Image 1 (cartoon, rainbow, N blue to C red):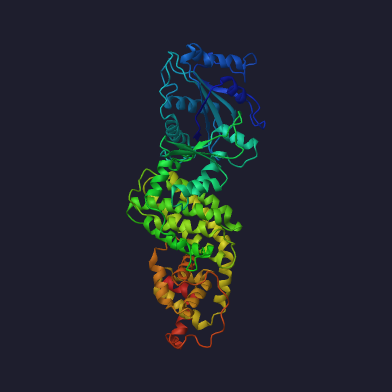
Image 2 (cartoon, one colour):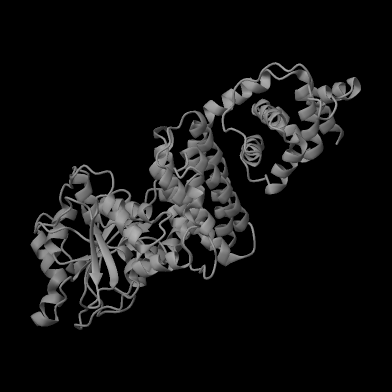
Length: 581
């Protein structure tokens, strides 16, 4: 159940909309379900003799009784309350009870107060009502409605539990300000899929991703095509900023400006400066190669995967300040990749970044915590530009996605352990979008690796299976059953050809971080092996081997050991071992 409080200046205009057909003829049977005094509130929906003018005059009477200089400029209080999709049908009596509880909780009309504000509740759809009140009490005083939005939300959580409705996550006042109903309506009329406020919030966050200085941040805003206006002190110092979308104007033809603090709590200039002052991204040596040229998108994605893995480890630790800093870094990394990802995964990356934005904020502070490594990774991705999504770029994107899924899952666990319900849900939603993007990005490189694995000689595959069982006994049976096992064998084979000891490399990949949160242990191991061994993110089919090992490698398995390895990879043998255990 979602309340959405706003104020306005025209009682008649609002009532005319509520009792009208709606913008798309969606209003059906508009009528009152509750009022401050039902016998004094005419209902134009059910009484043919009642008019909107009469209802307006009754509601406005306490306001009009005051001298003009005491009348509030915005005297109309409006609170739509909507049930969630899938909730049961509420009767008029149910909605009347909801309305009375909301006006009591918000201070508009407390129970037993005969001098309270006048209010009504109009229903014109099955799933919501509109509560309208005028903000002067019968005694001429203003209502005590401090933090009425927070109190309305808290009351709705109680109503949901008592009425058997879907219980939404409780807020903690760190969420970004939602678009108003007027903003949403304007966006619909203009054919926009989102409001200017939401578009600006996303673009400002993208401009901040990996920025090293305030000047660079402002420069990126200008490059993004936004209108930018800085608030300057007499000394010339910048005190704040506001942005507007080109073409978004009010009725007077003036740009509609949004200060950063109205986009999100962490996008005000003081909060941005705190982020930048905590330490700029690591020096740009990570974003230029030895020739002085910017690195390829695939190289920066590899580096970002390592930084994301470290962030996931921090989120599993006990240092809350460090964890909060890493959450901010993960958010910046998602914002950076969303701008530069290939077309095949761009939409899912963008949705993941929008969702995770909520998970970057909580009341826990990140003072003196260091997230320069992951912010540097975000900076490198921005500097490298767009990836093509093919060949090495596609494999590196899959490598990064595999790690980002683990990082967002770790973020969800961290928030859940601290009772941050909305942030945990946002992190879980981001993980779902990243999983979808991973399936797209990993399809081609995984298929190539599986073909590589199928062409390996049997003794080589048997040796790698034996190594897996010895190194990862708790997951070995699962891995050997997964379709990705052949791709893992191919990765171990490539590591061996590159001069690595595959057993040692596999042990490093396993001990890097726990694997229990992974959707596919096999896929996580593959990308860790390739990152640790600096192997290509894609593969080509191997040349036929003349021997299973080169002269400086360990000797091949004996016939008896090879037979044992074959038996260990046989599904029936695996099931039998499981039954014995």
